[in-house]
Image 1: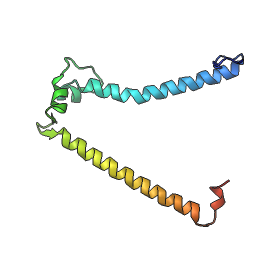
Image 2 (image 1 turned 180 degrees about the vertical axis):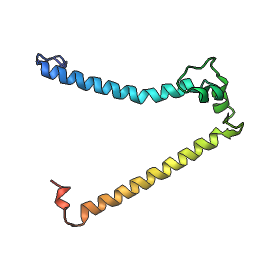
Image 3 (image 1 turned 90 degrees about the vertical axis):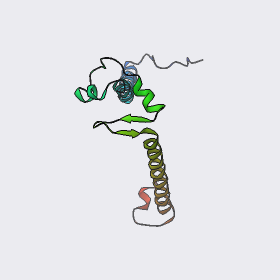
Image 4 (image 1 turned 60 degrees about the vertical axis):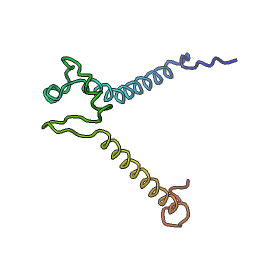
Length: 127
């Protein structure tokens, strides 16, 4: 019976390729996670601290920023204006939904054309 763990085979080339792929995927995962970490620690800064240096840590965390955004739905932007976070969230959801529906519709039209109409170069899609 073969072992279910096949990562550590005797073949050194196979192991080095898998290790390289693992490192590439690890770097990719870090590149996906880093923006969320950056956003989280920048959300604890004051507006002045954020615009002074976006890569520095907050001097004293402003937890009230989160309560303003998620309880009061109001956030102060530079210039002293207040914006409604709930309204911006709903607008984003509507725009993303409309764009997704439009993209699915256009993709379905293209798939229909490729599937049913005979045109030069059609065999390139079906090999």
